[in-house]
Each structure stands twice: as structure tokens, then as C-alpha cells.
Length: 360
Image 1 (cartoon, rainbow, N blue to C red):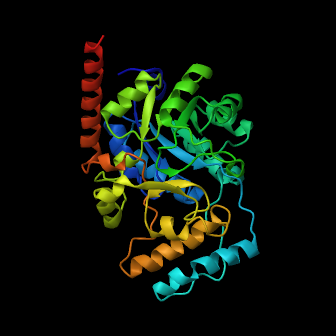
Image 2 (image 1 turned 135 degrees about the horizontal axis):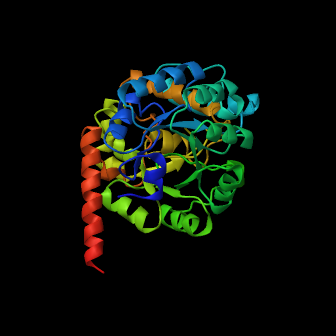
């Protein structure tokens, strides 16, 4: 079970629980770390004060390494006309639930790129691992994190992005395939999304970059982890697999839909947040995000509207406008405590590796 990444991260098993904003609380991250994997908490939707509390809460639950994740998206550019058009597009859906849409929209999340207070927090508290999504901060920031003894991992969806990760001085590459649930980590969405699958991306980055690679996207069980290792990855990152964990913050509606036949249908949409993300298909994705829809405001301005619509629908008993992020293999999810899931994953991984050895 030992790989270059397990040794670098000081974990027993090559299993990383993906950071999921609002879904992966300290209790989940700590449970995964205590079970020998790398748990993760997400700072993409919190400020430095809230991040400090989350980090200290996680440390109170585990003395083992865990990861904190930052969003490195370009700051939103307000566009009153586009935002008004988008709110007009949403108006009939708000009316369905007897409420009016917001008059204005806000940039509800601050990018790490504009958050020096977050950087100072990381340098002060020194989490074992920091992972980066949507892009990269200044190279000097990465150097400072590494100088503080922090392992820096950064996501990439293409070879070109991976080359930027290498040049920036990061320690590890997270290869995010198109199968992954949640937000696509594309650096420059305006230039399109190559949509490369996990298998092809991982193998390419293993062969063509000097850094250890973490596979992410569509991996739900030990056989999937074994496949990632066979491709040369040093670990696999699983997100959707942990949404049904007892310690997850997923609500009852999210859990129910993940355990239903609807989990077979996931689609990528920008309608909910303003950036492409994969979730279980619902009315928000199919209707609001239809091909005829107007352009969405920038991320995370569009998310302000998306969350308001979800709250209106939820108050009326509907979960059709929620962000139920999930990967393409979501139907394979299992509901159990995180430690138990970790044990099952390790057993499945071991059994798969033994079976493959017998084929030689």
C-alpha cells in the first residue's frame, strides 16, 4: 500500500477524501485521517476567521495529517445587465414558490488569490497539506507555504495546466477527470473545457510530468483505487463516495437522491454557480440551465442567485433546485460511517491487487 504519496503525506493508505465545501466538515476529515487516509476540509466558501475555527476543530479530532483546500478563481467581474437578465430568467421559478428573486447579486465567496488573511492563517497554523483548485496563487505564496513545511497539491484538468502546476513549484498534481463530481477545476473557463477523462489524464500526467499524481474523478471503490494505482497514480481522491458517510454534512434530500436511481444521471452545468460543475440532474440543471438560457453571471455571483432559489424551493418542500454535486459513478455510493467505508475501501483495494497479481 506504500506509494510516493503515502510516504510524502505520512498516511497509511493511498486514499484521499476530497474537500467538499459545505459537505465535508471537520468530523468527516478527522474520521478519514484517523482511519489512515487523508481527510480534507474546504475553505472555498469561508473567510479566514471561519477557516481558523474549522482547522482547529479538525485538529481537536485528529493528530494525523489532513488537507485544507482553497479556491483560486479569478475575481468575479460584476455585470449589472447580465445579472439582471439572469434574475429575469429565474423569476418564474421564484414565482412558483411564491417569492421574488433578489434585487441584486453579490460575490459571496472570496478567492484565495485576493485573501492574504487566509495565507497568513495557513502560515501560522501550518496544516500538513494545502490543495488548490481553479488555478494557482502567486508562486511566492506557494514557496512560502512550502517553506512553512506544508505540502502543496494543485489540481489540473489538462497537460497544460499540469505544466503550470510544475512551474509554480507545487509538490503534487491532482488530476481531475471529467467524471468528477462538483466544480471543474479548469483554470480558464472562457477558453473551454477539454473534458479529458480520469484514465487518460492520469496516465498522461504520470508519463509526462515529474510530480507524483493523485487521481480524481469517478472513483468510488477499491477497484477504482487499484485502477488509479495501476496507471501510476500515487493515491486516489474520492469525493462522492464520502457524501453518504455518517459524518458528512449532506442533508436528508441529498442522501436520498444519492441512494436512488436518479444518481445514475449526472450532468455538468454552469447554471447553479456560474462555473461548470457536475451534479445529479434536476430541474435546475435541465430547465434553468437549458441550452436556451442566457449567459450566467460570473462565479460566485451566480451562486448567490442559485442559493436563493434553492432556499425558496426547499422551504416549499422541493429539492429540485439544490446543488447535489456527484460524480459519474454516484450510483455506487454506500451509506456507512467514514471509518467503516475506509476499511471496506482498503479491503477492496487489497483484494483487487491480489486478483491482478494472479493474472500475471
